[in-house]
Length: 103
View (cartoon, rainbow, N blue to C red):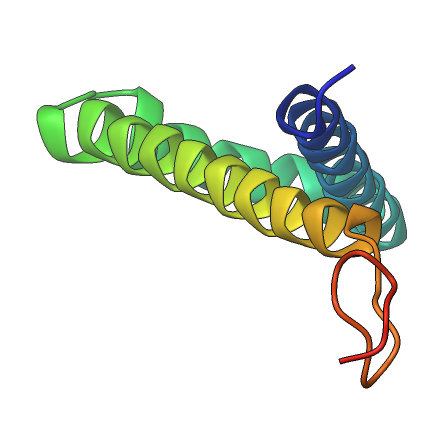
């Protein structure tokens, strides 16, 4: 497996962990609200965003979220590739060339 493929798998796994953690934090936060407060918040959210959908409240935030998600994935994959490449390069001793002979 090449470093590029491995970095893509690591980036995807890291994105899954980030999304799962965000969902878990949201569930914990909403669980602490209580049933009535949760239902009030959902009612306000429905009236504000879903009752009368328009371009600003539905399509544009979705496009922005998709773009940010792809950008974050690519950034993580790029940095992981650089780290893997750095860790796999052989280190030479000071004063020795690539062949291992003294200079």
